[in-house]
Length: 204
Image (tube, rainbow, N blue to C red; front, side):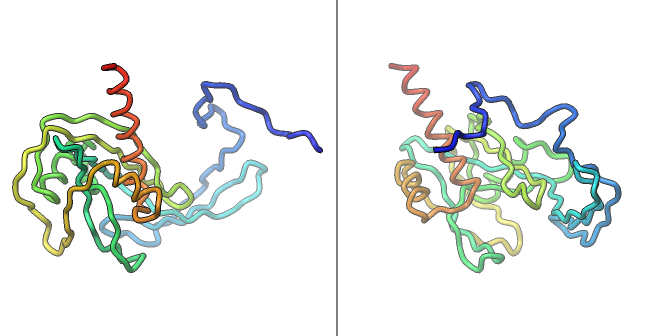
């Protein structure tokens, strides 16, 4: 049996970013192929780490915020929303794209009111995820929203979605069995589950 050639990293494993990274691809020139409302499609000429030229195509995105809204009964808000690229509806946590010069928390507060008609008295940052690193710079910051106050939706014109309350345990089951496949939703619910378990252990 051959010996594994890969180094075992001890905890804590460092972040992937490095100064003077030998994996760096250097951008030499770029062209905008499409400038849309939500995304830009970019073509770049790059120099690979070994010096050879290549091309990269990517989507530039202004960023977004997602919200795991947890009510007093231990249920989270899930939306059922049509996603046209996949030609079907998905279960998702509420989320929305940042307006120009808007910070993530302000976006989260605004979108939760618009999509669900809900205001929250307590907010906590759960984390940040990059959901499509192979072809996009999009990042989504996910927040926990608690102490909810119920109001009316203020959906944008042309926006259609349904909002439901689902117990967290069932939402996690939906992630495990494939009823939920949206990345921000799976990750956000996982983060919330870890946070609630940490809170419970600290109380014990």
